[in-house]
Structures are given as C-alpha cells and as structure tokens.
Length: 334
Ligand SMILES: [Zn+2]
Image (cartoon, rainbow, N blue to C red; front, side):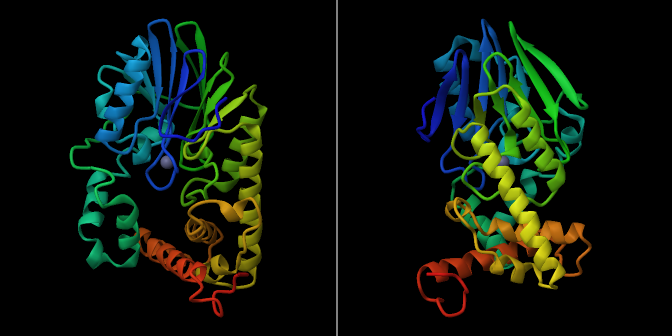
C-alpha cells in the first residue's frame, strides 16, 4: 500500500480504489470504488458537485466499470459524504434506515445561509466560513438526493463476484453509520467512524457505540482501512483512534465531576502524543459539549451556532498561544 497522502484516486488492490482529499479537514472527505467485471459500487460522494464530478471523471478514466455506477452506498448522511449524490445517475442509492432518516437534517440551504450571513452571526459562523467559504465549496446547485433503498443492521451486496458487507454500527458518529467491507479485498471503508490524524467531530450519536464500532472493525479480516477523513491506515490506526475516544471520555468526565464548564474543560486538557499533532484540536470543544449534554450538565450548549462560537474561541486562543502572544495565560507548555 502506498503511504502517499495525495489528492485523488489511489488503487489499493485489484479493482478497488480510495479517493483521498488531504488534509482531511472540514469538508474534505474520502470516498471509494469497488468493481468487478462491469459492476461497480461507489462509497460516498463529496461535498459539492465540482469535487464529485472530478472524482467520477477520474474513476471513469481508471476503469470502464465506473462509466455506469450500479450502486452508491452512503456511509452516513453528512453533506461531505452525500452532496454529490445527484450526479450518480441511475444508481441504486443504499444506506441504513437511520441514515435515510437524517438525510434532510443537514441541508445545503442552511449552510448557504450561514456562509452568506457569517459576519452578522458571530464568531462561530465566521469560523465555519473560514473553512467552508471563500469558494472552497459550491453548494448552490446541490439537491438533497436520499437513498432509494435502506437496510437495518447488516446487508450483503454483490459487486460481480465480490461480496461487500454492510454493517450499521450506529448510533456512533451519527444515528446510523455504515461500515463497507469488501471481503475478498480485505478493505473496509469506515466513513466517519474513523478520522485519521485529526480530531473527530463528536456531536451526535453515541461515544459508546463509536467504540463498539472500532471493535467491530478490529474483528474484521482487513489489511487496509479507508477512513472518512485523513490518510489510509490499517488496524493500528483504528486502535489509536479508539484510545483517543477513551481518553476523551475519561478526561471530560473528570472535569465534569470537578464542575468545570465545557470551555474550561477543553482548555484544561493537554494532548499527549500522537494526539498533540492531530489537526483541528478545537473540535474537542464540541465533543466535550456533546458528552456534557448527555451527562445532563447545565453548562452544555444546545444551540449549534453557539457551540461553534465556543469552538472558534478555542481555535483563536490556541492560535494566539502558538504565536507566543498568550504564553502567560493559555496554560500550555511552550
Ligand atoms: Zn465527514
């Protein structure tokens, strides 16, 4: 397996590919393609029509089987994995029933509004605009295109002679996350059950379910793990990520019991290697907020944009801290 974390299509076995988008930050998700003979299965689309068109074009250039995609499996409903669905014409679109129920919750119209009014909506909206705006993505012509078929807990799909098993491991990152296991290829696509080398966005689903999902991946006969964001990995990447979830739950709980607010808890946690080098550390604010909400804390913030205000404050403080301007007050070792 090539370790190169470069943009675009990576052949990871015989008639199987991963589409990677470094560095895997907000909106830059991975996808996949499994083929056999004339048959094809696409794992996820991308965050807008331009990105998805480029991916589908490169896949068609790589293999004739991708000229007509037979099946599209959406790992979950988040826009960075589904907003290109309308371009996969004529394909069966398959997802867990719980994912199908979430398809209209994350609408491009709302994101367009936040981006358009970011200056008025506050620092959280401005943070979102800094990552998702500026022409990086174009949400104008995205039409929410939901699954045409759903399954409950497990399903077996045939791509020519290849067996592809679907496991609904939700609630985990969302209500109904799907693992896509190409059995003979020994490859699993995890969707956002795995963020590799980056802090995860935990604000829905279940952290216990998420850890159980990691265990399920570890029980599969796989050599290559394609994360929802970040570079390709193997089971070691899954073990590391599960250790992160355990660390997060433990450290958040200690601070919850000590009566700290969400922002105090987030500022107080110092990341040990390898987590100290992961991108988007400010996501821990949203993750702690989610756990606090589940634990019934009065400090938890239910409003999505206000949660992003907290995320933005953490990111801004950390940027100041790293630039040396805040060394006396930010509490980090320098
Ligand atoms: Zn994602």
